[in-house]
Image (cartoon, rainbow, N blue to C red):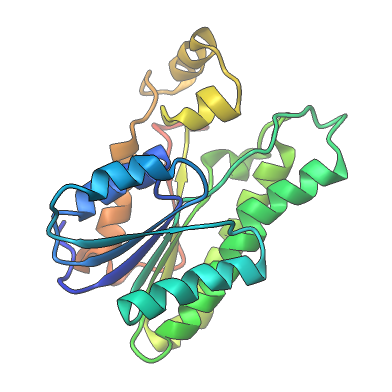
Length: 250
């Protein structure tokens, strides 16, 4: 799908596997891209050193509070001259923890990173979009609709909250031609599962075998949906949470 020329796009969490794959796909278009990261800035620096059709700049910092989220949006708007599309791919589990021993500190941090920050990112971006419209794409998780996981309870609760604000903000944004949607990845082979969730190679294979399509998803399976939503073909889609899960929980 082709993205309209001269669009100003901010990708939050661009150094992760999903964000990086999306960046690679968009970099061939005549657009302006802000790429945000909290860690792994070098991965983005190496990429943007090469020539691309897109104009690209890195923005780094925390996005787990109202203040920090607004600073990132405002910095991008000042550089780019506005914002047309916001894609929120940030997210983390501070530490996998059984629900019986989960502490409030762990709970609060996971809620802040996965729900509070994304909401205020969208709020600030949408305030800039009121006069000309735009698109916001959140990231949920397919397991949010099924109770999440026993060792990532706060993460699951936050992602269920993402699905709520996706629909709520879509309703509020519609009069201004601001479209708000979310993608909900299932088991996608990214560093999140191996590094953050501490799964072994055997764990990953077993989990992949549980998927009806008998494999883990790839980053491109998710970013393809995001690209569709960003394109003209997605201009009549709003308030949707699109699961990319290979049929999990059918």
